[in-house]
Image 1 (tube, rainbow, N blue to C red):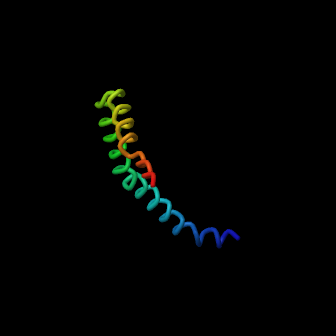
Image 2 (tube, helix red, strand yellow; image 1 turned 135 degrees about the vertical axis):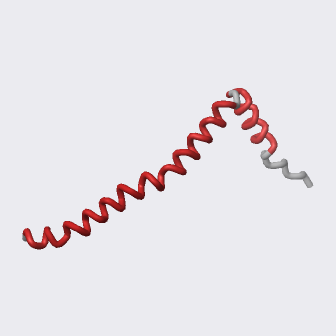
Image 3 (tube, rainbow, N blue to C red; image 1 turned 180 degrees about the vertical axis):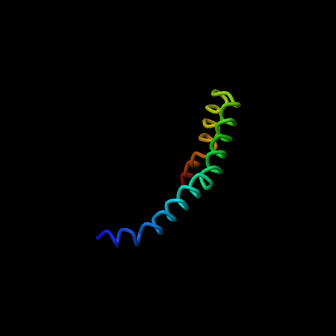
Length: 68
């Protein structure tokens, strides 16, 4: 039993080091993109966002069907 555990020790250690080394590097661009979106959202005032959503909603309403 102990011999089998020793057999998997190095591959598990290597997999752990790869995982620990790659996840922070892969997550960094995502974190920076979300932070940038947060900065952009914070710069534009709330009423401007609300007005933009209302205008977009009104412009994309389905047109009434013509009566025959």
